[in-house]
Amino acid sequence: MKFVKDARHVGYHLPRSMVPGESAHLPALGLVRNPWSYYLSWYSFQLDRPHPNFLFRILSDDGQLDFEATVRNMLNIGAGSVRLELLLRSLPSAYSNQGLNLPNFALAPIRDTGLGFYSYLYRYLYHGGTEPTIVGRMEEMREDLVPMLEQVAHSPSDEMRRFIAEELPRNTSRHEEYTRYYSDALRKLVATRDEEIIARHGYRFGG
Image 1 (cartoon, rainbow, N blue to C red):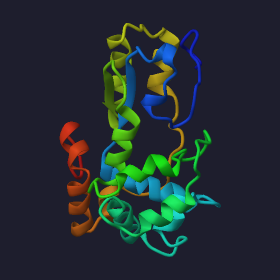
Image 2 (tube, rainbow, N blue to C red; image 1 turned 180 degrees about the vertical axis):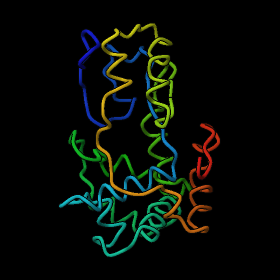
Image 3 (tube, rainbow, N blue to C red; image 1 turned 120 degrees about the vertical axis):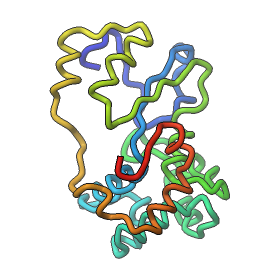
């Protein structure tokens, strides 16, 4: 919005399938992150909020469950968990352009897929376009974003390049290295539920 002429903000956490028709022909750029890191970041961010979202409240029993138990619940909502029904009753029935912005009808198809929440979110956000979606790894965003932009025929200005390279991180959560938080069983469950992302983007636990 700051550096690209005529850029428009059309929504927040919306799936690619909802890109306005006049822009649907354009390629999409996106980011992905290590699933093990994602779950810890999500948990830590919600735990620090004065009013966590419905997803966290239901999966953590209103903050009573620890990281292991909460993330296990999160990984199992697509594998027959009764908590999915609680979530569907609690989530809004329409987009709100704030917070998670995931209505109940958008989460419902996770039922019986066996997918981890993050893998489902990945499919939901990035599928639905006719032009290619170019997805970079969050961990290499500063190095990869400029080449990604150039791949879709956009040449970033010097000012934009500096911003990408030097701007301080935003929306961070407070926690130690993610490997410290996982039991062997939970590590393996993420590897199973989020196998698609892990394989596609070359992730591994601890790297």
